[in-house]
Length: 456
View: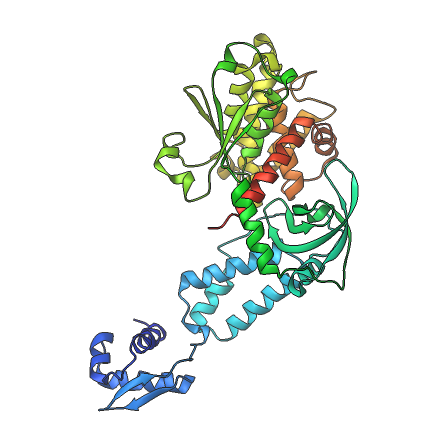
């Protein structure tokens, strides 16, 4: 056992005992000689541990000593390093700088072998939220810290602007958005505000009538009352499909912070009633009852009657066929481009984007032959040629292929994993404001607020 780990274990032994313990007993438990035990006691005392006693009498540790952070395990070091990288890339400048300073302080007191682990780049944080921010998050965090009201000018998803006075409750950092929770004096209720839609803000002198922790409890209770992991949506009567397909129950399994948004968009385009079951990573997503739906334990998935479909591209294709009245697939004899680009996006675009975002691409011709997509550059060039000058990917009509191809391009542009080529931007601009996509995004955002902030 390394000496640093042995010292830590010795300290833990002393912490577990309230009465003096003999050196012989400590040595037996630690598996070392009595002489080594005496040296280790002296090392801990030199570090500042107030250990009373002496050889032949016994030892006891006074309360209050905290060992400096040189005793982190390798996994603890990796967790700290990865967390600091996430904060540095996904928050505001002040928190990013603070994360760097904290890592530097930890590194200064670590032994060399653990310092190397802290500085290792084996664990990466990919590109994340990049939306323009009109109001600095530092201002919002200050309002939370000081527990003061603040006034904002807010623009909703439809572009309507309102003036609000908010009692700040919490700030959520999600993969695709930053969301402020607050009691809104205008609506007289708790509301969730996308921070990129806050156009102006200033802190007021007035304080909310209740402390923030009390507001947090009230908000969480509201979330518990309103939240339901099985939420049914039924479009307007004019959109309801007719015929045999309506008789089958349609269940959508998703997590709002996932690729499930692709299938969610497709469901809104179809217009059939469906219910949602939200699955959480690592828990309900891996539960036996859901593994019976998707043995990979991931989302999205749908169950239509007795038919189960997984994988976002397959769900899009299935729904287009299951609900032909929605007009989301070309005629059977005219589906060449439809199938080609739908599955090109699934089989080539998505893996190429994922690998590129992680900082890796097949570099040599030999390596490229081992991957179905060849190279990231080749995929992007092919995709740019496919959408150049086209409103829709598979002809003159919007289809399920546009849902999937559009989602890949939209995600790529949003998170910076594809170049902002004119072809991509022009194609995506014709899709991003489709009513069905906006409805799906708004519902997913609402689910994210309810699920991500629900008590553990």
